[in-house]
Length: 353
Image 1: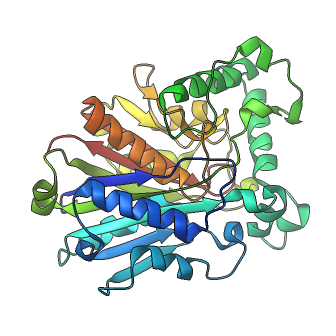
Image 2: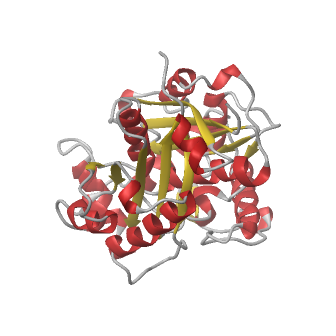
């Protein structure tokens, strides 16, 4: 399929914090203002907006309606919302630009996980007949998958601790990281389990935050910046919601999304992966076919900051930053949604087109 050339031309993130007093609309106002300024445009220049957020996290129905205030009510523009991470909002905005009648779109992701207990909230999103009554939350499902990988010999607890230490060490250079520092792997392995076989370092922090990305078509992107970050491949794929219907030792949907996005057309130098738990890195790098020469999560990744509903879109921003600010030529961003990597998105970006 031939696609219209679309590039990322601006972005912005809030500081990632354990708790914020700002509403989601206030967080979004900050990043939408920052992203449009970064792109050299105003809100009036945006033709389409798409937001990613979650009513369960916000604690109210139709929570996205109040967030439209951050985009601006005038002049009127086409608007949409996905009950998904902002990476899927970016995908919808990218698809909308493929129609060719508009030139500029903005995608956002926002979440305030600090307002409730995730172990109480997230089971409500599960299948209401078989999974929700169990009260199993995201961490429980992650622990189940980690145990399967450990028993299969596909990862070790030391490898998982090494992932945590490396990620949070890398995050020391990231001004948006929530958790960073030097960690000793042996000391990490002495900690008690939070949910066997996961220790505290295997889990992401609870984070409040938001981000926004401005994209533009072809000539408009070149007009707005001398350094557009071109989206050269974009796809997502899903598997059954029930973890019991999948082989949790692999991520088939990640492999399918990567193939559809054309990841194997050329090597990538950097991969920003939504590895919310440490065991997921080995699984995802295998599914994506990434070798040791690829830098994984130089920003620190979700183990350094995990603003639910913005974590995946943050991966896109961090990968784009590698192109624009660090001269990388081809990079990868990955986002995931659902229990045990149920749905996965792959975005390939390049500096020249």
